[in-house]
Structure formats: structure tokens, C-alpha cells
Amino acid sequence: MKTLIVYMSTHGCTENVVNELKENLGSNTSIVNLKKNSNPDLKEYGRIIIGGSIHAGQIQRKVRDFCERNLDVLRFKEIGLFICCMYEEQVAKDQLKNAFPEKLHQYSKTEAIFGGEFNFARMNFLEKMIVKNVAHVKESVSNVDHKAIEKFARRMEKTYQPMFVLI
Ligand SMILES: Cc1cc2nc3c(=O)[nH]c(=O)nc-3n(C[C@H](O)[C@H](O)[C@H](O)COP(=O)(O)O)c2cc1C
Image (cartoon, rainbow, N blue to C red; front, side, top):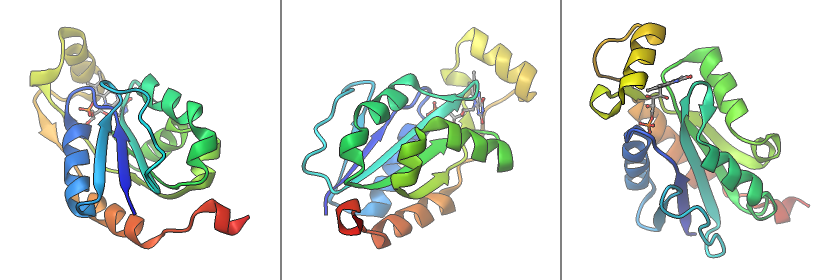
């Protein structure tokens, strides 16, 4: 079965995570960056993984728009959802819940939080000020959960169960 990973990345962390996920998923996996193509053709894919990163509590607008626009098609696919973010535990879980439409959570088979990074080299002046003052972090740091990426890929490979079998 073919897999498509659809994502947005503001500073490059999610992009790296997506490449790592692709390596874990094998050769039948394609990637679409919503920044370059906001309307990918989903027809040939049985499995769709959607992800983005959290800034000021929100996932990128283009990720939400993609999900909402394609809900009717996505319900017949095997769905995986993930976010990259720096908060952990309950805050991260709330951010994941808030990132995707409620209906998509119902359709999804696998969801995960992959951690994130603060990359000062990629931030503008305002973003650096926010991170320094809100997160109290002064230099680049990476908190990517590589084990979670591996586990997510394994779960995706196991859980094929399209909706049309269930209804
Ligand atoms: C300006 C700014 C705001 C952020 N706001 C949040 C936030 O509200 N919650 C959170 O968990 N992480 C927050 N982060 C951390 C990002 O989610 C993290 O840097 C992530 O790895 C970014 O992924 P990307 O490089 O793919 O955009 C913020 C980072 C920046 C630079």
C-alpha cells in the first residue's frame, strides 16, 4: 500500500522528522510539503500521515485547511497524525488534540508527539525574543524523540483497517 506524508515545517525540524519517518516506513512512501503544494492528489494512497509544528499553541493554518478540505476523502484512508512541539506531557497532548479537526481524530489509527527543537539560526528577531522570554531558552536545543518516530512507523504498518470495511 502506498503512503503519503503531508506536512508543514516553519524552521526545518518537522521536515527532518518527516524524512526520518519516511526511512522507517520503507520505499512506498511519498512526501508532500504543503508550503509547495497545498492540494496534493490523494487518490493513489491508502495511508496518509499528516503533521506540522506548533507555534503559539497552533499548528500551521495550511495543515488545518488541508484536513478540513479533505475530510470526506480522508475518512476512507488509514490516517496517522503527529505534531512537533517543545512542550511535553498534558500541554503537548492538548496541542495535538487542538491541531486537527475532531472528526480526523476519530478516523485516525495512530497519533504521536515527536518533540521538537529550538533552532536560533532559523528564527527571526521576534521569534528569538519570544523563545528567550517565554521558554527561557537562550541557545539552540534539540528534543526530537527518535524512538517515538520509530514506534509510530511500526504502528502505522500494523494497523491497516480502512473505514469502508467497518461500515
Ligand atoms: C516563536 C515560537 C513559538 C513556539 N510556540 C510553541 C508552542 O506554543 N508550543 C510548543 O509546544 N512549542 C512551541 N514552539 C516550539 C516549536 O514547536 C518547535 O520549535 C518545533 O520543533 C518547530 O518545528 P519546525 O522547525 O518544523 O517549524 C515554538 C517555537 C517558536 C520559534
